Image 1 (cartoon, protein in one colour):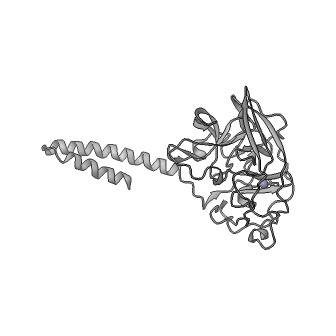
Image 2 (cartoon, protein in one colour):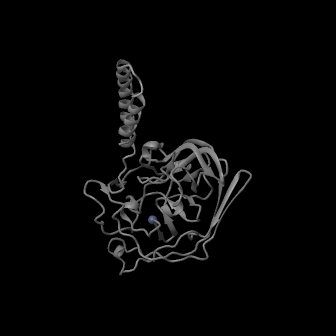
Length: 314
Ligand SMILES: [Zn+2]
């Protein structure tokens, strides 16, 4: 549509010329340029064609030997128990799931004691929190039998404050991909960010039930498997990516919009990141960063930093 508008405008510009031959030649040259622009535009549209109603399910998309785009590079693959018991109707037979039709855990619980502190001193960034979200309410957990989410995922976990403190490299260095465990980092609102797999090594965002800010608890606390809009809502697409959390290697995790476009896996490397200008610590800075996307693995696929915080389970 935009190409057609452009063609009409340029056509009008050339109408002032008197020589019909010149006009034809210019029109022909413009036609070629516009055709090329059209092809480039189409390629761009195809690249960004991620349909939130038909997202590829990430079940089993992990490796314990190498990093791969669209996969998680795990240090160990140990399937446990628990998780969603019944497959919801938003999971399709063709290996996709509909994120727009997924059930949501009800409720709007406030956490007035939520706490987070992010400070930088020398080469160290210290993040301390009690794992409760400082900027949004949560659903009611354990999931109540009266909640429609209960029939798919009767998560018995409750949300409780739980202290954590991490010392991350403030000036992380990028190196070769490193494997990860179940935990990826911490959001700027104090909440844990996990890898995208549930205890059965399935796509946790497709199978497990979360609240209106994409969070839910397990025995270790409230956490996300993807970055919720609650962390960057209201931000213009035209502004550079904003830091919504930090991975345990110290690199920022950012919102998905860059140059007005929503980034997809096609824009990212094997660890689900890229190097570009982002807003971090209130300043614009060119750095490697992980990107929140609609597609599995959603946040972090592996660590690119050379130093991972002590005590991170891997
Ligand atoms: Zn979870």
